[in-house]
Image (cartoon, rainbow, N blue to C red; front, side, top):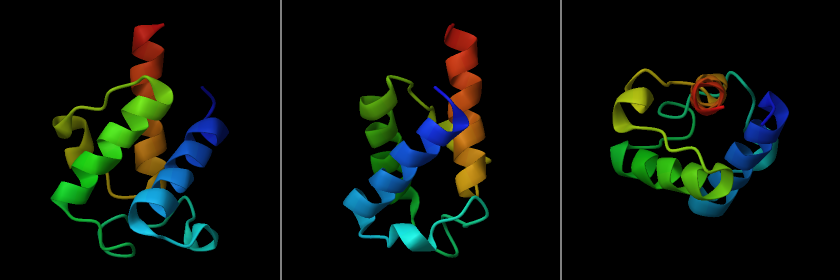
Length: 83
């Protein structure tokens, strides 16, 4: 998957799961401060990403994630390790 494809999946997930306005989501958007996502929400987001991409992020992968760009990079890293 490309960065752009991952970003589309992520933005769609944020809109579907948390009713986030997709126009307010940028690469620099902080999941926790700007979107008020908590640890339970993060688990839902990880699960949604797995269903949409086939790549499972581990909880420890998500500990260092703060922004939309961080999530994209985490998924990219997993996708490259499984190829």
